[in-house]
Image 1: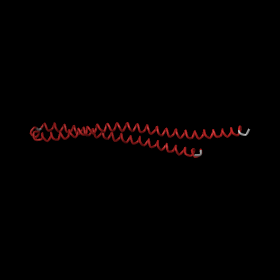
Image 2: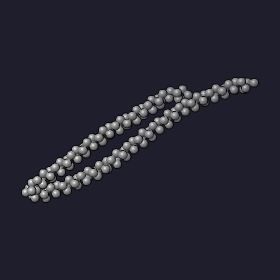
Image 3: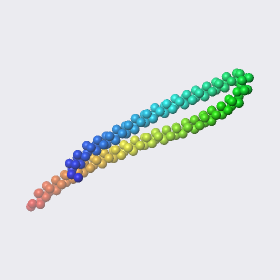
Amino acid sequence: MPDNDLRALFPLLEAVIEGQKRSANQLAAFATRYDFIESSYDRLARQINRLQEGQIEIVAELRKHDAEFQRLYGESQRLSSRLDAMLQRLDEMDTRIDRLSDDIRSLRVELVGQYNEILNAVQAGTLNKVEIADLTERVEQLERQFAARFGSS
């Protein structure tokens, strides 16, 4: 490939690399959106806690009414068991989501790091190729000069 072609490709490769950097920035924006979703999940968890507090208040109110309490006690136990099972499942889901969230953060950081390393390597390779072309041109020029001086005598 002629040197001029290599030099013409260099700005194009630079543009591709810049595009890849913009993609990396978009990944960072995605991470910000993910953090927003995570904070929304935290708000939902607080609402669930308020619902649990409401359940506790209901149980206290039932105890004030002895006659009704006896009739409703069995139902309350059944609902309490179901709610406990649901809360257990929610706690398991919360734990799993936390683990997955940590994994995603870790992978996101690793991905951006690897992506930047690749971009830097491609950019360095491109610069090296241009420098090799320049050096090759200089060596050829020196060979021509050497041949012109010593080849004709």
